[in-house]
Image (cartoon, rainbow, N blue to C red; front, side, top):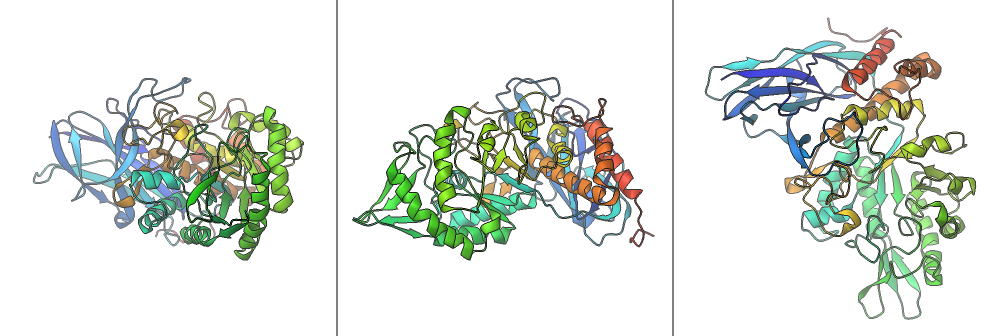
Length: 555
C-alpha cells in the first residue's frame, strides 16, 4: 500500500481528483479555535485506515472526516469558484468510524478536519503536530510532515458583534419526526442551539408565532408558536408566556445574549398577518390570523393592542429590554412603504424604547423614520454608509452570487472567511443570515433531505439554506462553511485586539494595503486561500511586534 499525505489549511477544499496545495504552518491565540486539514490518497481500491495524532497537544485535538455532498444547482458564477458544474463538493464533517478509522477509495483525495480549542493557559510557542495513517494489522505506517502550530502569547478577546443565523424549530420537528415542543423536541433544539453558540451565534430568532418566513402565499408552515393565546366569547384575549419563558431560559443556558422576536407581518412587504392560533371558547385550537387576514384588518390591531403591552411587561420582568429586537416584515420593497409604516406605527405605539430591525435594500425606510436599525444586503451596504445608525448590520442570503463574498458550497472558503476582515473594516455591529437549519424547499412546500439536497429543491445556491446537517440522535453535524464563518468571527476579534494596541487607523491601513487598489471593500477583498492566509499572517506578525512582556512561553 502507498499513501500520500499533505497538510492543508482550513481554507482548502480538497477535491477528489486534484492534489491540494500544501500548508505546513499556522498561528492561533489563546482562546481561539484553530483547524487545519490533512489530505490523503491511497492506491488501494478499498481499505480501512487508522488515524493517529502525534503532538504534545494530541489529547486536545478533534479529528473529523470531510465528506462530499451532491450539488445539483449552481447559478450564475464568476471566476472565483472551485467549480461551475454540478457534482460532488466537500462540505459535511462527520466523526471518525470506531477505532479512529476512515474508509479510503483508490486514488481519490480525501481529507481530515483537525481542530483544537486553544486553552487560555497554554504556553506560547511552536507545537509540531503530525498525523500518522496506516491500515490495521499491517506494519506500514505513513506519517505526514509536522504541521507547525504557533501559539501566540495573546488571548483572543470576547465577541462583541451580534450574530444571528435564523433558527428553524419546525424543521427540526419535521426531520426528527417528533411533536413540536415535546420533550424530545426541546432536547434536539438545545443541542442544535448549543452548536450554534459554539460557532459564534449569540442572537436567537424567537417564534412568538409561527414565523411568516419562506412560506408560499396561502401556505402554512408547521405551528411553532411560543405564546399561548386564548379568546373568550366576548372576544377578549388571554396570553400564556410560559413556553416563551422556557425558550429564553434555554437560550441563556446555551449562551444566547439577545433575542429577536419573529416578524409581526408577512415577508416581502407586510401585506398580511402571520399564522396565529388560539384556543376558542369551545376548547378547540383554531387559526385566527394568517395569509387570509390583511395587515390593516382592525381585528389584528386589536390583537396587538392586547398582546404587546403584556409582552413588554414580561420582557421587562426577564430584564431583556436592551437585548430584544422586534421585526415588522422581512425584505420589504419601496412600494411597500405605506404598508410597512402602518405596521411600524403599531410597534412604536406599544413597544416604545425597544429595538427594531429588518433586512431590506432601500434606505428610504430609514430616512422616513420607519426603521431604526436597517439591515442592508452586501450590495446595498454603501447606500447606508453615511447614515447615523444606532447599530450597523449587514446580511447576505441567496444573493449576491457574483463579485461579493458569500458562503455557497461551490465558492472557495476564503470568500466566506474574509467576512471577518470586512466586518472589522466597516465597523459592523451585527450580521444576519436566514438559514441555520432550513430543511424545507423554497416557500416551505415540502421537506428536503439535506444530505441529498443542499439546494432546497434547486431553489437556492448550494448550502444557502443551512449551516449544519441533522445527524443521528438529534445531534447536528458541522459543515466547512460553518467552521470557516466561525473563523471569520475570530478574525474580527483578532483585529479588535490589534486595534486596541496599535490604533484603528493603523489596523485599517494594514488591511487596505493587502489590496492592489489600496482599499479593502465588499467587492475588492482577498478572496483566495493564499491571499487570505498571507493577510492573517501579517496581522499576527504585527500583533507580535507590539510586545510580549510577562507572557508565558515554551522553554
